[in-house]
Length: 91
Image 1 (cartoon, rainbow, N blue to C red):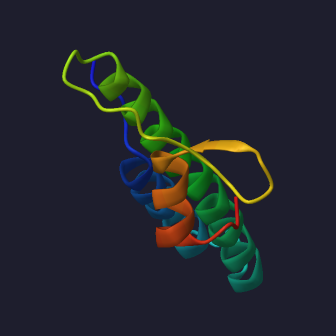
Image 2 (image 1 turned 30 degrees about the horizontal axis):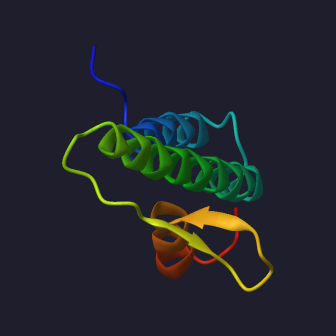
């Protein structure tokens, strides 16, 4: 079974929230709060999916070592660097 992407998940939740709003089960403020909360969750899921894809790539016999050391001396991967450059260090 194919894993659902963060974008697919967010689109599904967005649709469900919009339906609840249109049915009068959510106010406009509640809708905005829920969408913001879910967007944060989707970003966290996306980050995890990027890291997981990177780890899968490391299993390939053709991979190169993409580990780097930050200025703080902590070890990070290029997948983490990519995420932070693309989305910022929000998650």
